[in-house]
Length: 111
Image 1 (cartoon, rainbow, N blue to C red):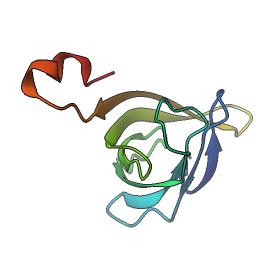
Image 2: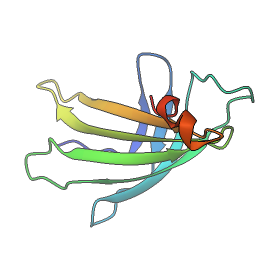
Image 3: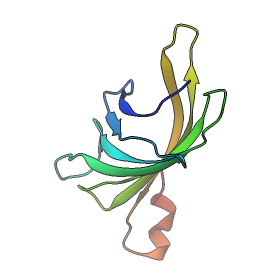
Image 4: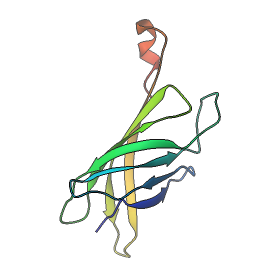
């Protein structure tokens, strides 16, 4: 049974902490990125998310990070897998939207 509550770390050294998941699957937390192209120093940033409360424990989830140190927002979507040894693994994909100065520059705003 996957439980998103607690600390998670990815292969690049970024970490997130998920507070308790409520009975509806909603959660809050904080993301500590290890990588950034922003000019300002990296700061922990708030996250807000939701997960399916599936009976098999292999839940899908999504969350948004509002970066405190840049004019950008990231969204993550993924699934939690419970391995045979009891280890939980999160697989996810993300999109980052950076602020641009005009509509003609919209093409370069999303990674």
